[in-house]
Structures are given as C-alpha cells and as structure tokens.
Image 1 (cartoon, rainbow, N blue to C red):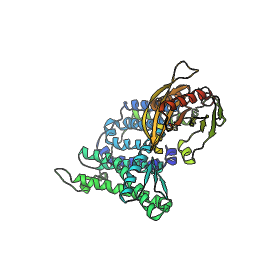
Image 2: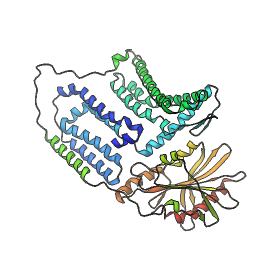
Image 3: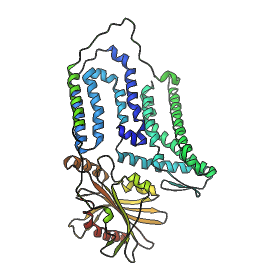
Length: 488
C-alpha cells in the first residue's frame, strides 16, 4: 500500500489514514474504559476470512485481496481482544482504514476518463459564458491559440478521494439526523466535479487573456491547491446550513462533535485484565501468517515465450502493405504496455485499416488493456452504435465474436472492431477479462494478454457494410499470425 501511495498521486493522502484511525480510536478510549471488555473466540472467524483473502491475493498475485485481508484481520484481532461490544465502539475508526487501500488501476482509469469528459464539458460551458470562442474535442479544449488538454491529473480524482475521506469524517462528527450525514457524504462527489470544472474553466479564461503561462508551472499547481481549499469551505458551509435546517436549528459548533475523551478521575481504581486466550491464538495466527508472507517467495507469473510485436510483418498476403505509426509518450505512459504495435495497412483502391494491439506480460497488478469503449470519447468521437458481431474465419469452424462500433466526429465516420486475446480466449466483455485474470492467475500462474483493435474509415459514398467486409478481410489475414505474438 505504501508503494501505491508513493507512485499514484491520487492516493498520496494514504499516509494520514492510519494516524486518523488511531486518533479516532483514542477519542473513544473513555467509552472503552467504562465497559468490561472480554475477547471473543468468534474473532477467529474474521481472521480466517482474512487469511483466505491473503491466500487468494498470494496465488492470484492481485495485491488488492491481501490488502483488504489485512484490514479484516485487524477487525478480527479487535474482536479477539475486546469482543464485539468493544469493537462496535471503534467500528468506524477501524473502517476508516479501508480508505488507505488503493483502488484497482482499471477502476481508477475508467473513473478518471469519465471525470475528464464531464469536467471538460462543464469547463467549456463556463468559458463560453465569458464570450470566448472555444472548441471541445473529447477532453481537448481548443482555444485557437492554445490547446488545453484535460489529462488524468486534471480529472478531479486528486480532489475526490481526499474529499471523500474528509466528508466521511465530517459526517461521523456531525451530530444530526442520519439523512443529513448522508447528504454530507454524498455531496463530495458533485462538489468535486463542479469545483474541478470551475478550475478548468478559469484556466481556459486566464489563458485566453494572459497567455499559456497560466496553465503551467507553479501557478497551475497553486490553482489546484486553492480549489481544494474552496471545496473544504463549501463542505463546511453545507454543514452549517444543514445544522440550521429542521425543527431545532443549531449552530455548526453545537452539532460538530469533535470532542476529546474524558480524563480518568484521580483516585479511580485500576483493574487489570488477563491476556485473553482468543487474543493469544489470534495474535499467534497473525504473526505466523505475517512471517510466512515475508519468507515465502512471491509467486511470479510468467507467460510462454513469444515474438516481439516489432517483428510483425508489414507486408501481408492479399496485397496489404503496412506503415508503422506511433503513440505519444503521454499515451504510452497511461497505457503502461509491455509491448505494442500500431500500424496503418492498406491495399490498392481501398481506404486504410489501422491495426493496434497492446500486450501486457502481467495484468494482476492492476495494469490491463484499456477498453476502447471508454477511450474513444476521449478523442472526441461519439459512439453511435456498438454491439457484438460474429466474423467468419477461414481457418475456424465457428465465427469469432468481436465488439463492433460505429463512431462519428462531425462528418467523419469510422468502423471499429476490438476484442481481448487472453491466454487462448477471445473475449468481448471487460468484466469477463477481469474474472479470467483472477482465475488464471490462481490456476495457471498467468495473467498475460492483449487488446486488439481494428479501425477503418467509412469513406464518402461508402456504406458501413463495405467497411465491415474490409475489416473482416484484414482480420482473416492477421488472425493465423497473432498466436506468435499473443500466445495461447
């Protein structure tokens, strides 16, 4: 988890979560002192569940399971030590620890792309309110003299996750009706989107009047920090407003219960508890598993030998001639591929076919193929039609299923085929891809795979059926050759 906090800026707040949890537990220390707390053997069931999650994480090489298992184990140890009665007192402080676990990369990526598009659209609307001519293409804001790209860092996730933590804490301390607490927690999402959109809009406006320096360097970073402070101010204002709603209007100070534990009165007798048997057994089990996790070599996933995609032929049967294309560094960094190929193939008298494949040696760590379903809108294209379609292959008795999409940008139309080659399987469903990454990681010790995408324009005067025949012909040409580069 610490590695995730270091590498992913959206989770850099993770260092503070254990400190916050410890503070909240200390805040309940006076309640814990008032009750006779005894360990419960049923806490071992939670430790057993945690052990199962840890084992699943080790065998599948998906760290997320082990990380959730760690927090579940802390709940189990709490029940073993102070029983269910004591654990209920500190259940929220313990639950806060779930915030320190990074989401899977594919979830983070999908969420980021959607927020980029929403923030871009709202930000452009704000720019137009100031009478500035602007054109939006996906997540690229074109001001004419300057193009402002709403990249992942500007998606708002760096606001959203910390603000959700603070919103949860605010709802926890807010001494009011449950529906008010729910509003405080739920409002963090639209609040983040609106403030981030406002930031994008203001950057566009200042760039128009004072130049591109307004979107770069220290000033750009300061704008992000300032907008987060605005989010906090609005959250506090929302709580103050909710405190005054209802039959009994109160001030924010009266309903915001950030209190310290009552000190122990002088002369209070001290009673000592024996170290409970459930805690002893649970602690030993926790220690043994912890020792094993550090001593047992990490399970390494490795796919079979394969040829690099750089060796894929540019001259193919059927008159297809290819020319290599290239991706920007930023795009490659986002994809985090281990190998890839992008090339434009054509044959005399026909439009081109763009062939792109992204290959991953290991997808268990969260890095996996991006779905074109979410990436296409980022380029300014609108998906007018998408479904699954069978493509007959000359060397196969059963048609191959692909995702087929018709996309449009202005007067331009393109036809897209894409699918996922995953260790001998051809998949069209993104969730099926994740499931087989998990199951194959456990049973086969592999999670390698690729996403393959074919794109061709629907030329003027051409019907979509002609583009279908072109992609089907090209797919029949490359299908027998893919096994060397994306092994079964």
